[in-house]
Image (cartoon, rainbow over all chains, first blue to last red):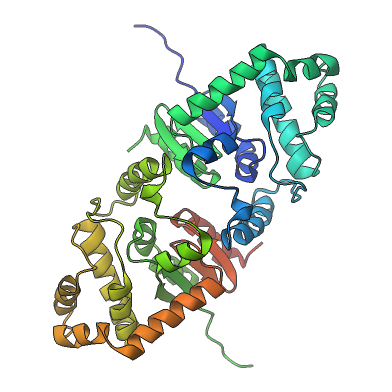
Length: 204
Length: 204
């Protein structure tokens, strides 16, 4: 009998997604309980929205106002820092490129960077579309700022992100966060309890 | 000290909404635990979609396929009958008018009718946009078929539904199901656990 590692949990999110931010606080604990590694996969939701004809939540009448209220309520519910960032939403290609550049060498370091980015944007309201802000976050984690800035323009890194976005769409990822357990898809921070139940029971 | 009834829970849904169907199986129990009456309020989601620029889930690329998969999964999760109805979605003005006609006299009878309609459509796949199907459902509940058919064309009943749809939009209802506890809005069958937590704690 071959001893196999259990399959990973895929955690897809956009760095400008409040629901991705909230989910990022819970997903590792869900993985730990199930004894599964969580693989973080930032993608660009703007590219997906072009495909699906969607637009940012805050630009949709009624739904936008609800979402703003809901984010404040969820931040209190999860007890995590929250401010409504301005500008919002933002382009997140730079943050995602930096992530994949780090991820190639050290997945845990990339996750720490991702968490710091999300907290900087949604907890402090500082704009992580700004390369200088990203470099500052990297410096705080002991990552050389100039190496990170160079990575943002690196063709290989850019191509890696492009491939991940293509893969996301091929897998049917249309929103953030999006979780896969084996091949089972779960959309939304609302579904993390269901993800945990699926992992615990093996599905239904 | 004046003895006051606790405020009702408002349960807004469209008769063609799978998530409304799933929520309809849980909402009364949530109300019972909290000691609050649940007031059912069918509305026409098509009218709201005109306002928000949304369209039926199944017509949205990627999201539509996910939704179909999700409904089957939720039906197994909640252990309720499910078939993907054809046609779907449907116009629900007739079912909603019948509901409000019954509701004017007897809220419990209107709820029983609503439950039977949802089960007929999502459990058996029979088209509740058809007045004859609605009349048959009514007959099964001891309601005179001819009176129900007359109510569908009654100007007062039509006007009542129109008023409810206007009220839904004024209250910011943009999807189905939509629940209000006091003035707190909750969108989606996914949020029923949060509704229960809000009721138990008095909010946060």
